[in-house]
Length: 258
Length: 317
Ligand SMILES: Nc1ncnc2c1ncn2[C@@H]1O[C@H](COP(=O)(O)OP(=O)(O)OP(=O)(O)O)[C@@H](O)[C@H]1O
Ligand SMILES: [Mg+2]
Image (cartoon, rainbow over all chains, first blue to last red; front, side):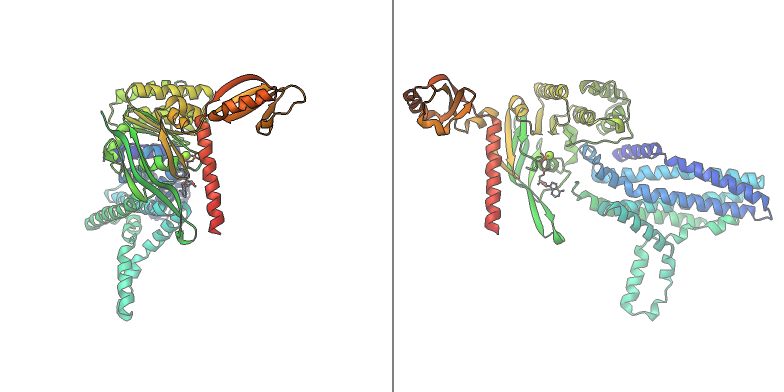
């Protein structure tokens, strides 16, 4: 675990030096423009527009970082052969993977937290006050972060056994599918033949479900998110990430390095 | 500590290739070899012989198709044993967003050293490999030889008992090569075991207690560099002059070098050759023993291997 921590801190340092946090500048500019524009059309919906826009931006920026950097985490080290010297140190391969994962999630957490702070500032600017109910925005941001962690885990898994380009496509594809898994579960199973029904059910539980992580509608209207959902999503993310990372470790531990 | 630092048993590596990976290329075939504690062992062979393959198998970077190996008495799958070994990869590359000092510090962290100890060691190692002035430059601005030096520094940073170096001299200038030779000798003086691969036979000849020669994935000989040379029959070289217009019977085997002629004969035929030369009126300048070098031994093996490969190809078709 300590060794995974060493890898994680270096991964964070790499992300910072690769100027990942510059995405914050982009976010800041976007929110400033939005605040000015929305401020002019004010008819009482400024807040929900700002919140929706802000959360969407946080989500999209995070998604881009987690997919592209998530796939690069391991594949770049293999391609550049920086792994050779590292794995000759007393580090197990799963410790390396866990560290890489942890490092990028840490990066995303810092990045997302900074953007959330920015969003709160813009809300304050538009509304001139912050209420207790605005805390729902923080819950929404937390859910986005959980979702991003899941994506990083998936990107890591794919990059362990395929090329970076394919891994990016798979991860992005799975993310899109994951937005609609709920529909798959709601399919009218009784009209299908039993084989297809069982397969659909299996698939709907195997695929990541991102729908529950989206509470933008609640947040935009300042409505509270039930505590049970927070617990459920946290558990879901932890368990799903653990399973994906375990699978990645199994694949990666047998891999011959070029 | 007696015993072998590295014991390799029947180590084999095949790479699948071609359609559906149905065909296999054997990069290493049933390698049996020991590296004794405290010795400097040279691993020599032509390009593609399987040197790096062997070393990567030992380091657990790739996995054997068959066979196994033990390092310092532990199976190679045991990562904890890496505490006591240092490894320099072939054409090393490190995180280019870090400086040399940062990379070394990062690697040192895996060895449970205190911050003060790490700092002191990093400085000492940078000095040892001649990078003390470049320690604060990002590695993306390093030259090939400088990266090689960083690689060497990280291999010996934690005071390992066994050091495995894959072509430590490659990319280095003459000064750097000399420094690497000194480092290897210093490791030996400190009682460490060193195994290194190289193409530079003269380096192997002066540095190694023993060398292993590998060609085409197969080990062709192990022994002290001097002994290996003895395996080849030695000859005698006669240098002579001929009076104008005369013809010596041995002349077909002779090479002309300016005014003089050079003739190489097996040792047992030396006196017969001298008799014949005297009969032809030759004036002998010198007779010297021709010492086969490690290089010749090596070249013979490589050529034999090529000939065999060609024969196999012809028979196969
Ligand atoms: N990943 C791989 N896939 C397929 N074949 C490989 C792979 N890696 C190495 N080989 C083959 O294994 C053989 C041995 O390669 P290896 O790198 O061990 O040679 P080497 O002795 O280190 O040569 P060099 O002196 O050029 O470094 C070569 O024929 C090479 O083509
Ligand atoms: Mg090699």
